Amino acid sequence: MNGSVILIVEITELFNDSISPVLSVATMFIFAIAFFSIILGVGLFNSLIACIVKLSMGII
Image: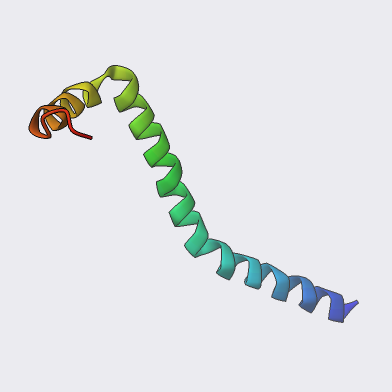
């Protein structure tokens, strides 16, 4: 019984050590999707895109 408890503790530590770096990146990724979806929905990119097209003289 004692050996299985140590194994569970080791798996838990391994999981916690492995998920920490991934969790911060996943949180930023979800925030970026939500942020840019809202910005796109409101239409704030329209003026930026119009300016870029104007500067490039319509050549894409």
